Image 1 (cartoon, helix red, strand yellow):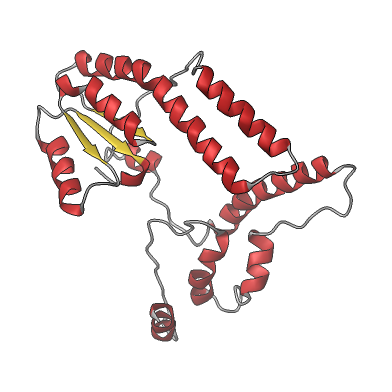
Image 2 (cartoon, rainbow, N blue to C red):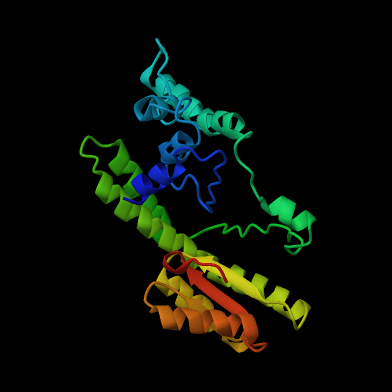
Length: 239
């Protein structure tokens, strides 16, 4: 209903501006409604738009199925780049690099990769189970996702100690430094919070209500004694 109302209001308007923080949340076709209202003559066909920008055309011939999959993967990766160039005259983007050059964002800190030499026997056992399942004739997507979730949790647990050491180094470097840590599982979050509790830890995760999230966010932003924020994927939000 909102789209129909906006389309009705847009008729005959000489200049249109659309503001969005996430113009393409999942697929390119989600841009079509906006583009169609901007220029109905050029962007008139949703099915054609979907076929052009969401569904790459398969090659006429490939030597093997694996080469066909590789070629289709390459073409899928090219589509967003081509669409970005196509829409460049229509879109104004406030990128992080632009905001940083204007002093609206702090300097970018160097990226740090935490490498875990050996995540443990349980990880390798689950990994073999996942590989065997994918290669078997009885492959089940849901079962593979469950095993993949176990692998992510075990990898997260293996990274706890080096991440705590890295965070402590940053916190000890200056009394005003604060650290934000993202993780995927609640038991990983809890162990990180326990290991860094002497620095003052706030947490945001899916088990908190809206008021509790706001309180945790306010504590991290305003209290000097709360210097660590641990966030799970379920609780990702601006802080």
